[in-house]
Length: 461
Image 1: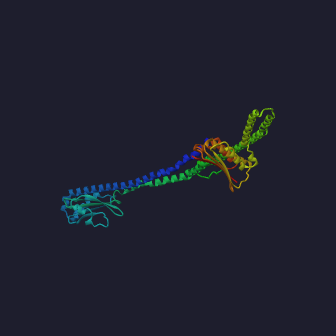
Image 2 (image 1 turned 90 degrees about the vertical axis):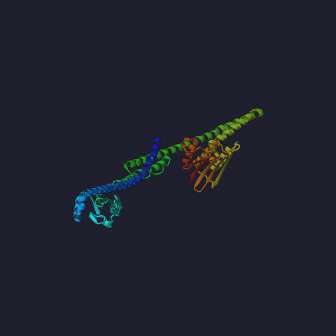
Image 3 (image 1 turned 60 degrees about the vertical axis):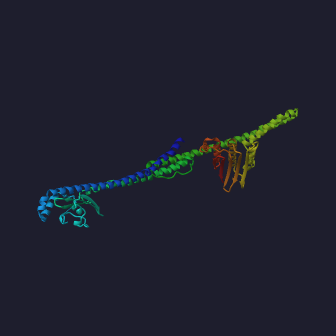
């Protein structure tokens, strides 16, 4: 049985695996949030990198123009345009998508290469006015389809404004945009993880949960339920087959134990009946004969009276014992009169204790086994109450309902301890009542709290 109990509780331990998806859900959400945050942070850092590189190129170009200022100032517009194209070619790259703009103090375009956003006018381009005023800096302007990084500064020797503009989505570092997608790889990984968890729950944890629930029912003694059909991995199917076989064997063993207990009780009752008959036919008759012999002896009544009283007391005690062993009222008159006489006999000589019996419904005779089992349960229950409950009011009630016969025993005593109720099988009196109830196919219930104990037997008809 210890092995069986271990099997019943093992699925419960395995079942805790179902909490894994719930545990990892906030972790996965946190990682996804971290991935998105990392992506935005990475993008911001890349913008700063490109902006810094763009500003450095602007400074390099301005320094180059300052070194060529004398030559540029000496030539005309065509010479200046040709020379600027030659000198600034060093900034160009096959991977660079840039626009370079040079404007003089009169806002005449001295040089222009590349493409700017179609919404701009060259002379009003951001950075032009600032550079003509001798300022240097950088500007980041978002557009629906791109981000434009603009660096500007003055060519002081010539009085020109130098502006270089780069497209974030089309510039030299455009390929680095692909790195923004790397953190997003966590999102499909999260999806794959939960897909694995769902599959695990579908094929492993859910079948285990069903078997666990059934195993708990079996652990409580419900062997009649059919093992629920489950499917899953091979180990689950093997566990299902093993559990089904084990439950079948446990049910057969339990039925054997019930039959054995019923046979023992039947044997006890037969032995009690035999002893009661022998005491009545032999011992009681012998005492009656002794009493008659005492009467016939030539003895003074004052001398014989104590002996006759002792004989009468012994006879009375024997009759009470015979009644306990095998109540004649039960065989001759039925369960209701037998219970009524039981309650009356238990109340004799008990001051301060009220014991009552009540019957209700359409009284009918039951089979001898049913009447005897209910009588013994009432006898055991009332005796236990008198011995252990310290109650002042005890009652037994037998109700005959259309499809149910119910026996109830109630007292107002201290109650049965919960540890006793939780393990009835270890207490002989309660276990005996339980076995008697099961022997006639009925159910027995024990309820107890401070100030009240109820024993209820329900027999369906």
